[in-house]
Image (cartoon, rainbow over all chains, first blue to last red; front, side):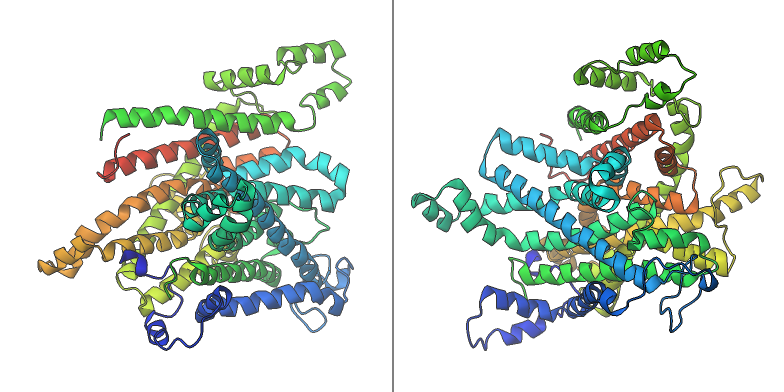
Length: 317
Length: 320
């Protein structure tokens, strides 16, 4: 009834699916089933292409577009887009395209790495909480609730404010800030995954196949890793996708507030931060850097929505 | 709604507040650097004075004692002294807090005013053109980072069209109606940026809440009794669907505080968020700690409101 509605609505209405099911020819593997449902979500498919292009541009771009990111040329400062500089130049005459291609690597890498940290911590905490009943479970979930109640951005800023200097001393300006930003963003976003994993474990651990595994003498960790987690993966993947987008926004926000990466590392947020003071003279600078963040985040969010349709255990489409 | 329930909820707040204060204090205590490093390096201050200051502020005590001192001082309202502004931290925060609460409140109101009708319409007509457009726009809305929309609005309305002021000013030197007009004019853009961002995610929540309710049996009963569609929606569907939405609005408070931080920075709104950023850039640790703690307290407080409202709105909740 209420649950038979697709979670997302950008997918096609279920009418089309109904006509396809009776003529089922062959049994599909779960992966192909998911892919079939994912393809139905047109915006998600388009987003996959766009994100693929962005990733390709960022990974391969600097090899093709060989303009140095820090070549200062005051005779060509704040120029609009032209053939020599497709995205224009900034206030020091540096090529914005080259800077964004380079900075995009860091922006996307931060998003991906922070997601991995969040998922790792979340799965660990969720699995421990789900498998151990009683006070450990209650305590861990209380901790998750506590972290959910923390104001994320202020705390993020606080930690970076307090720890930045000493970490950059140890790991260098680029590595230090990268490790810290990833650790902090990831460390503040594990709660959602932990709750999902715990809820999944609580329901799956009572199923017969887990009972069978237990009867065969599988240890707790084997039950979780080999039997429960693969079945609980769908929602975690969806949450992880959304986390990538959130982490990219968080990193850009930090850079935009002037508390993220140092000026010589042009992440997209940092480029936007540099651009905002000359907005009236060089609007292209703001538009290209902000647009890149927006496009990446939007396509990741749409992909997450498509994945939710594809991996939803309710299998509605 | 029993009074016991409210009291129990209030009591639950205490461990969360204590937990948050422990986390904040741990972050501060683990942080490298000495708040008296500058003092010690200053040749005008003799080492004995610096040492007695250290003793006075208890910097040589064990960590748990420093925590107890700190929490006791916070509870007494003794929040320390701002190095940069040369006034007490609590007066500084009280000066800035009303502006932030006003902007956040107006933004949240705008978000609800926009999201409620759109979400209800989309939810009662799933898969219609309107629904698809609304959903796509909602995705665009919460994928646009607030700092980018803020800059875009400034670019369009302040730089190109010159309709609205670029910077928010607390000290408008006009009075009467003129003051109200100016206040509204300068609040439009910050409120718009925050409100639409919040509204975009709220639309999706309202829609899915409505979708969950629309197919319940009591709605069919209401329809079959011959009640008009409009009345079914407003009286039967929306009333039930709003219960989880109310909670979500309160639970989204941490996000809106983060958004307020950014918008205040862009539009130079003299609120608590820009105070935090400027205090960080000026190494003003007492202010940084106090502002973070105030924000955390506000979040816990709004969670409490959400719980109480939920219990009040939904008679199915048992007041355990």
